[in-house]
Image 1 (cartoon, helix red, strand yellow):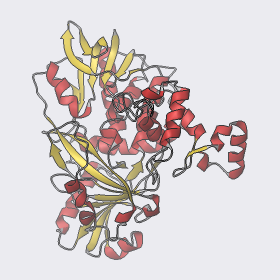
Image 2 (cartoon, rainbow, N blue to C red):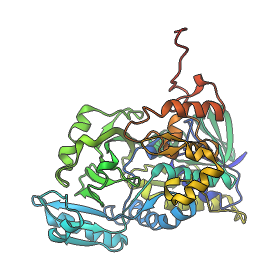
Image 3 (cartoon, rainbow, N blue to C red):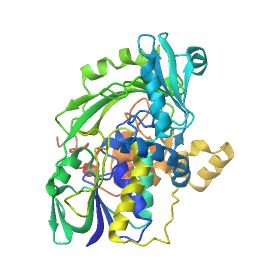
Image 4 (spheres, rainbow, N blue to C red):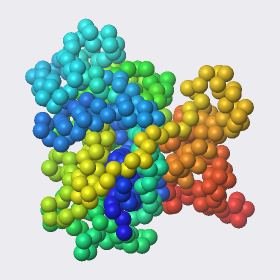
Length: 477
């Protein structure tokens, strides 16, 4: 019998797991995929919002600002990349300045620090590639960029190192209240837990509706993106937003934490909760829309496109806390933007409620530090040479585009909750994320997984058990 079963191993479930590991608790994270970070967390804008555009008094507004303030310390403690590059919400000459002023006023009411509206002369000094029609902007110095993969893994690894159990490749099929606990039926057997935390992303409504008469309805809102090569990464230095519409914050142009340039997302409601495919119609208009705020975006430098789903709940706000008519069932549902920014604060909030419900004691042995995968590029030449002497694997480059060594990939495979497929290695190390998108290094990574897990070459997959790569031998086929 577990004290807590958290359903969902994305950034929200992992943030809650880490916060719960600060208590003496028998906790479990259940994730249907073979790896963590396979849902909304793996495909988003990778930005940390300041908190100016959420409705004052909403959970989104409160937790965005609280979560934003936590990232500096978290990035140091958990060793994941994060940078406060600041953001700009730009207004063009055909838009109403009153709308920009409303964002400023909301930001002030929400407690966002350092906000100011700046005019074109100052703007162009900050961002020379802003469109000619841009006249002013809201400057948000607390905005930031992050690697959502490394953030997710950092939270989960630290939670696991502090005693939280993880069951991957385990799909929840049914939840029932059985006396004083919940019975969770999965495709791998039955799990019993005193409490349940629902952090299942676009499927959170289905889980809630199994146990509560207060039904939720989550709409899968697809966002499509174009990712540009690092040669385009300096086209802007801030995250450039357009004035938001009812469908979202518009198409943004932003540098990524790893030096690329990102353009997107679209905003389209889809019926398929697995609909993460890109479309010609969706991608076709991205650069035209982006040009309204940033000119001369080098569209020929695109190296890949992708899509992700946001869990939009009809009420428009996060659904957090214990369900009114399902004691011990805690929702973390409807987590769309600014969900990534709010994740640390959501973790604190839900963990506190669960801890109070179960009267949990503090875990005096909790260790909040985690060391990420070593990046040799951060070392001096002397330090790197010394590292290679001690471990020659760091001198063998597997991914030439991103200069990722065998040593980094071995770390990704063997560390806590290590990679078991190509995408798992890619998300942890960036091996395969460069210009050739894994065209050269994938066979080498497959060999590493085969040797180190170990596994049969027929069991090595791109992402999960169904995405097989090798089907047989040439002469046999």
